[in-house]
Image 1 (cartoon, rainbow, N blue to C red):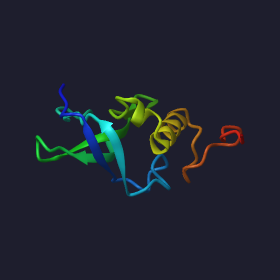
Image 2 (cartoon, rainbow, N blue to C red):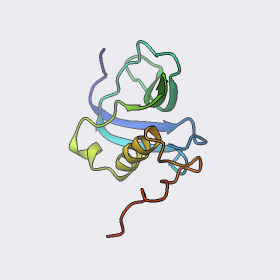
Image 3 (spheres, one colour):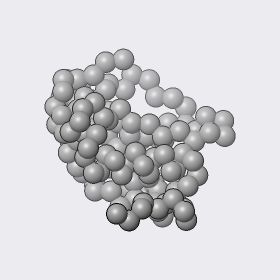
Length: 120
C-alpha cells in the first residue's frame, strides 16, 4: 500500500536453499529503489529476500514465491528505476523467478535443458 523513500536497499537472501536463490549472494545492494511495507501476506507466501525498513524499523519481504491452486507465482517489489533494472543480480533474479514459475528451473537452481542463457 505504501513504500519508504527511494534509497539504496541492503537485500538479504533469507532462503539460500530455494532454487530461485541458490548461488545468490547472502547480501547485495539494490540501488536507488523503494521498499514497500508488507501489510498483508497471502496464504502460502514464502519470503526469499528482505530488506530493513528505516521508517518501520522492521524487515519487509521484497522477493517471494507463492502458489495459487496449481499455479506457481514469483514476485518482487524491486525494480523502480534503471539502476535496479540494469543490475546483474536483479536480472538474474527475475530470470530465475520466471523459470521457477514455469517449472523450468531445477532444484539445484539451474535452467532446465534448452532454457540456458545463450552464449554471446
